Length: 268
Image (cartoon, helix red, strand yellow):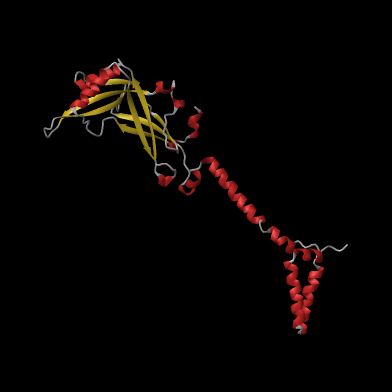
């Protein structure tokens, strides 16, 4: 049960799903007869599918709005479920039909697009899913248009609130919207982003070093300093032509790394 420790109380919710269909079941008589014949046929399996769709508020985080999944139960020829459903459609039965292992009531709502049942909470995997009953309800329309039908699903053997299907949903924690662009790429995306940011910072710190070494790491600057001092002296005396020559010499030194190295070489 270590799985439970990954969630807090606010991460777990119970959805109470209405068992009665929200819409009337409309089927033409030929299609109804075809379904009955398929249920009573001894050729090929038939499949019952239960779909669920969970919607997440993207304003509170996450990258996928809808998570979908389904559970299927194959009905073999001669199955009592097939016979019971055929009897419901023929009007020969009023009792609900029992469908075993149909309803997974523990669902994990992840960040991704699939909301699968939590296998750790079931004994024998799908054999631990809840049994449900299917019944076809009928009522005569008030406007005289005929009999209206709808399907009703209930948890088998329920003692109270039989018209409600309880589904316990475990919601995975999601990052806030401000970090959604990182969470969408998973842990590898986060790792690559951090490495790129650090790499860019380190590269920016050292990228200009090669250009500044010849100006900041000179071994002996006495001759350069003397040249600068001479420039200031001749400027004070008004010898502008000599100042121009000395300044041109200084510019040439800084434009010629080889000459600068010779000029600033340490004294032996």
